[in-house]
Image 1 (cartoon, rainbow, N blue to C red):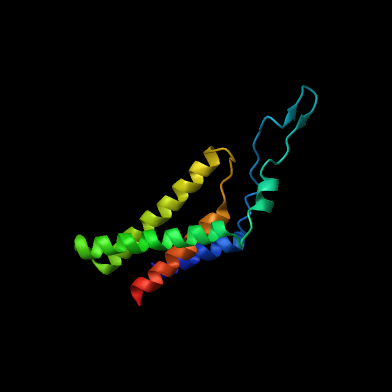
Image 2: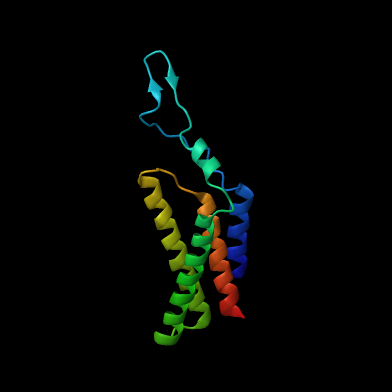
Length: 133
């Protein structure tokens, strides 16, 4: 489980959290019969999505606390083994983070931040380290 989480975390970091490759049409795009001009509406959002921001700290903290809380309930209240509890609690925390980003994408800003997902993975990794040691 640790190797999987580290591999997933490293792949997200190496990707650089750059989701500027996503193109979408908005009311700001201009389309005519002879010319199609599709601008990247996410480009300016990537610039605002900084690595070191309070938002990333919130994602890291909430993911860590969700994983720790789920782990406690699973192991101490539902008699699930430590290893199974770690897998389940990590999965629940990661799912919550992904659902939050999908909600953000459908929301007002329309932006899925892979940098937020990386912060979530770091928080889950910290929780796994706390649980294991």
